[in-house]
Length: 128
Ligand SMILES: [Zn+2]
Image (cartoon, rainbow, N blue to C red; front, top):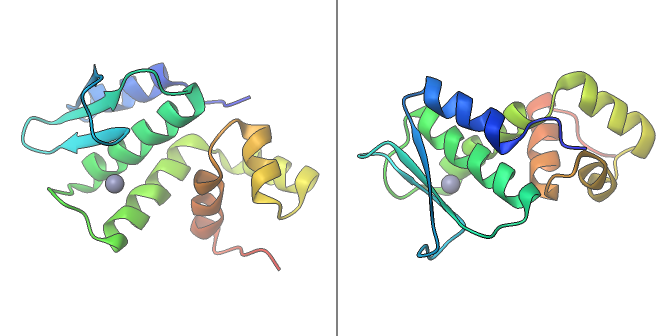
C-alpha cells in the first residue's frame, strides 16, 4: 500500500506555499503554474497516478523550476517525487522481496513504475 497519500502531499504543498487545484480541462495529467504557485491536477485520475503526478509537480515547485521543462529538469522532479513517495526502509524491504523487478516493486508500493526507477537512481543503485 502506498504510504504517502494525496492529502499528505497537500500538506507538503501548503508548507511550500503551493495550492493544489483540480480541473477537467488540462492537456496533461498535471501542470505546475510557477507564477500562481498552483499545481493543477486533472480530475478522475487513478489514485496511484494522482499521487505520483502531484509529487512530480511538487518536485518542480520545490526546485524552483519555471515554465517549460527540459529533460534534465523532468528527471530531477521525478527524483524529488520518488524521495517524497518512497521511504528508504520501505524501498529496501520491497527490493528484498522483489529484487530488481521495478514493476513488481511498483505494484507492491501502489505507485507507477517511473517512481520506482527514479528512486533507484537516487540511491545510485542499478539493477544488474
Ligand atoms: Zn514535469
